[in-house]
Length: 469
Image (cartoon, rainbow, N blue to C red; front, side):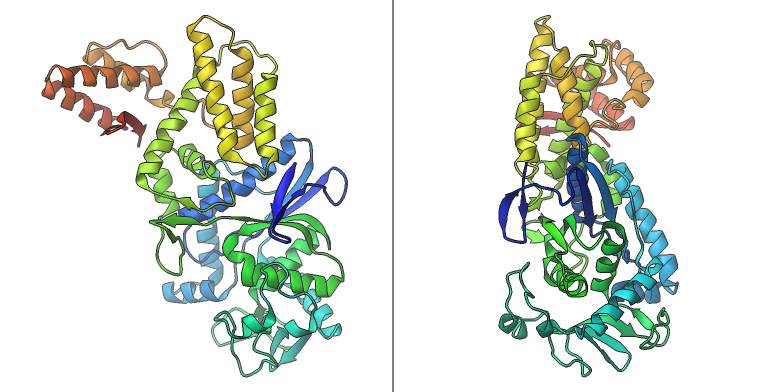
């Protein structure tokens, strides 16, 4: 298995620090507002990595934090007139609900920054003792020039940074490049007692302290969105390695950004699509499937048309699973699984892995129609979908609409027997026949009544598609 590490910018064989055990730390949400579809992409990307490593036999400890104290959270809470804790817990529940809908497995450990103030204070104290950090009127700053190797993750040098726009100016700093580890208390803001005065932690130190507590000084994989490479992850490396004197994370993985019309999705610009609303309009696993159509490091364009297409593809997956539920339980087809493993071993190449899945479905349907044995292919498909996190509700599909669809089929003199998906297919065909015979009223009534039970028919240049709302 090979994975691409941003640290070194190359593919590297995956070799865990400690034999068969794998520690993963992923930067989770900063809970100042509800999730957008970009957050869903990151959650799904690292969920698939985790699932695959577990399936390959690794003992994985997966840590994903929650940042529940930060400048943006304080400002958002102030705007709403509520406490930061109330806002963080409400928004955190929204993220949790979205991740559950997307079949993202809960982390083994989900630490909150405000529950780890002691660990944060201890690490800051170590950095001060090592003369890598310094106090300045109640604030504490990390001295970037006192640490060799700053910039090794992002590839930036100190001279470039001095002329860049990401420098935080303040009168208390010894150097404009230095960043805050501790921020002195301000009126009306949450604060905790510290040896250098009451205040709250800086954003970067939170992750270093929590990763260290649960995974040790050195662990295997640190992940997050590519927008975190600088300054967040660069600063994490610097402060962690300055405190411990050893390497922090062996591999750094970063998912690409979700784009809308080519522009990065971000709360800071307001250029976002609400994730929870999207999951109400489309099957959540169809949204997950759309995320997996792009390799995790690549940008992903997001649009309604692509969601509609992903929904059709997901229904095809779900339909095959239901169609083959009664087949004998046998070992998965070996050649299919070899192709799947080859794709996933190539830096979790989910587009190629999905191509293997759909090729297997095509061949499985061919064998079924030819009265052949499709059991081993069906077993392989279930296994692959499980690893990709697309099996969780694949067997549910339209079962909850079975009775309504059967009644609708009878009303239009259409065969009402069989799985609900097959009934929908026959109803769509009946509408197409009515349109071909210029029976526009029949076609319109069929479309409207399908919409009434939650099935939308869409006519496009590529043909007729349907999806569940």
